[in-house]
Amino acid sequence: MEIRKNVKYALACPTSMGVRITPENRMSVHNSNCFYMQATSAETNVLNVASSLGNKCLAMTKFVEGSPIAMFIKSQLRARNIDFEGLEVPQGGPWGYRHQFNIADSGFGFRAARVWNDRAGEVGRTITAADFDTERIFGEEGVAILHISGLIAAMSESTAKACLELAQAAHAHGTLVSFDLNYRATFWKGNEELLSGVFRGIASIADILVGNEEDFQLCLGIRGPEAGGEGLASKIDKFKAMIREAKAQYPNAQVFATTLREVLSANRNLWGAIMLAGDEWFVEEPREIDILDRIGGGDGFTGGLLYGILKEWTPDKWIQFGWATGALAASSLNDYAEPADEKQVWAIYAGNARVQR
Image 1 (cartoon, rainbow, N blue to C red):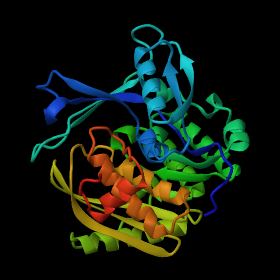
Image 2 (cartoon, one colour):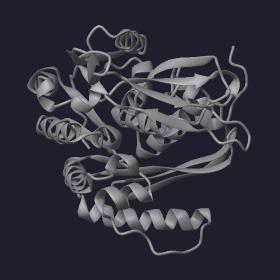
Image 3 (cartoon, one colour):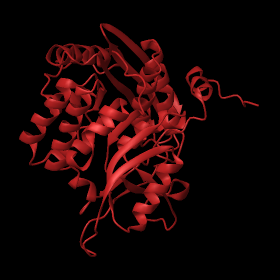
């Protein structure tokens, strides 16, 4: 893969921004009265690794005009070194547009984390490619990698078409396209035909495809592996067989990756990853990691993987860095990894938790 040089933005993404509220002290939502609020989206979570490490990134989104939540989101993105572009849409009264609320706790022990999405009237569902000057962004200013998540692509007919058109515009200007399939049954219900066509269209020009077995099967119609054992070796063999078929159907993609996770408790997971780069497989066998809040771990992995690609490291370093930034995201109440520097990430990969003075 050839990384475009002399660009304004290392990473860009279409996204629908909202806020997440999390109970303090790992309490459950229903019996808490103090909550931590953060600006969030799956796509900007991915950008956050590169932005934290000094790279200019862009969120392509939409805002409710005059909304204090929109003001909060913009402030948070600025603090995270993420630029943003987005039309300001009038609320239209109390029953009009708004930014989504993601309500989730962190879980504890054998009490699993629980997530409740409250997204009715979400302004981001109205995003179109025409909202953005794609010739300026991808042509004149330049973007090294455009990242698209299946979450924004599946939000509405409008966002589905927008993601495909943005991917096509980026591809035409030599920008690499990253696509995390992120299948959600609730998003696809009633829209299977439209989304299947759009997802296959994006995947056909994507350079990097991220997703688990279910994602590839349900989003792209890839035939799943035959039933067999459930051990780690069996899971890896099944994934490899499926990705070989995906690679045959989507030959433009040069990188396929997914995380491997086994939940021991809400506080402790086995965390690993597998990647095909070109014709070579790379596996990070699952290791135990401690969990403060697991949400965003997969986005952290993808962010680290893309950072390694941007840095033009060897592929073994891509998956190693991604494994570590995923673990880093899980060590934070925020949904995203915020590395202080590369050294911190490599220390996590090495399992070195000694105090650094």
